[in-house]
Image (cartoon, rainbow, N blue to C red; front, top):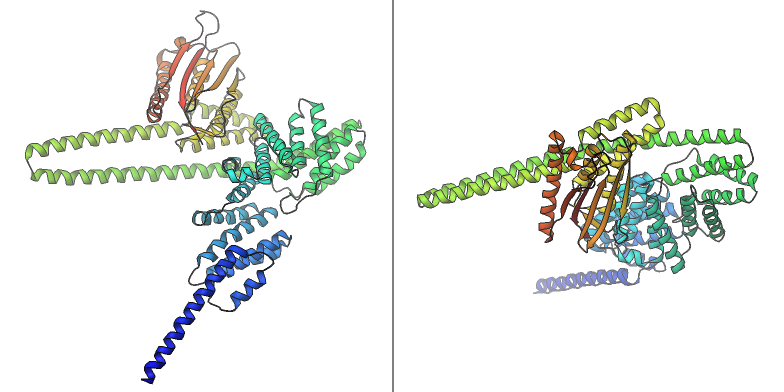
Length: 630
């Protein structure tokens, strides 16, 4: 009897102890979710230390790390963030509160590594944060996306930076906050500037949006940088506007108090460069030279990203101008030589990276094609096996019925195979670059390497960017209109380099938001290629191509490609007609397919512009393209 009572007592104590532990853990969970801040870290630590089985240490370490980060104690913050990760890795069983805190710890490590200019390492932590966000959605995910975009921008990965900044633009929470929205708009302006994607009009558009948002919301930290970039936009064609915006930049820099948690470490150098431009125009030339020499001597040996490169290049430009204002042409030439040497070394590193990335892109695409082909074969084999089983079962039944079913399945199989072949052919055609274009491009690059090595580098980078864009676009059912226009512009720039016998113009309706519209890729390029290859093949006058994009309705745009070449009828003979008809037929069939899916009517018109027997001819092609607003 005593033994039974003892067992009951022990069981009651065990149950009570277990319930107490559960209650303690529930209290800690509530404490963490509702009340955790830097004032009560020690209280949480005491609660957790009271029982080694309680969970929440990872949350404690990650929150402590963020508190240290805000205080500028980066080394201590890194130690605490890594403790948060190791604490979770070593704990058994895993607990959701601790795992959720890892998103904060990895994001913090990504932030600090970015400040230390360790961009690749920073990205590794940020990608881990994105993975955790899939399980534990983070309200301010835009901060992580924006940091990833800034890293890729600094590394020169323009397309990836653009991809992530577009996500920021679609994030209503991010764009609803003053500081993040201004930073995103400013960075988009930088991304479209001459040093990156080289689309100056888009660059100015985003800088003006960033400026207006800053003035409206009272967030002025980015204004010195915004005014400086607007000044650089006007530098080549409007000196009055350039000086005006440099003065605005200098004025805002005078009241600027940098937050070193987010401000670039080279901010002081940029301020000196901005001030020097104003000083030169106000007669303080020697003071400007002294400050610019300080910038070039300090930055020259330690340029790790494009932001620093742009500041140093700007300093060299202003230094050359200062020496010219003093009438010291020999010093201006020396500085110019030093600048060219720096840019050459920087572009060598950049070119190596571009070529390595391009090679990797080709390998990735080839591997994906092989995998896709194996998957297609596997699907066909699976279908064949299924059909064989059905056929065997049918033979047991009525002979006529089995024959009918067999014929029906055979016909269905042929139709599916045809559809698969058409789909595969379209994918291959979409990813194929005209062999004549590649042959001419490589010949041009070979000639430039011998005659003008500096121009060859830029030319090869342009060709690499075009090939990469073509490969990336061909893998997607839809691409952003901005990406498609970038690929078309690159193609036309390279084609016009072969022979300076034509100009090209883009006219995009103001109602079309290039960033927020996605359309099927490679529909416009064949029309332009026909104009270049067949319209300008035998002309003796200056050629011209105009691409007009106009919004017809909320889901369709009109694309008109006009050239002043020899004309459609004259070129439609022999093999030229066969090649042109084939490419246009593929475009027409793809348009019909896309419009059928969208429930709209397709438009495809081609006409001869001029009937004059001896004058310039010309061709106009109009197509309607369905799009999706994202």
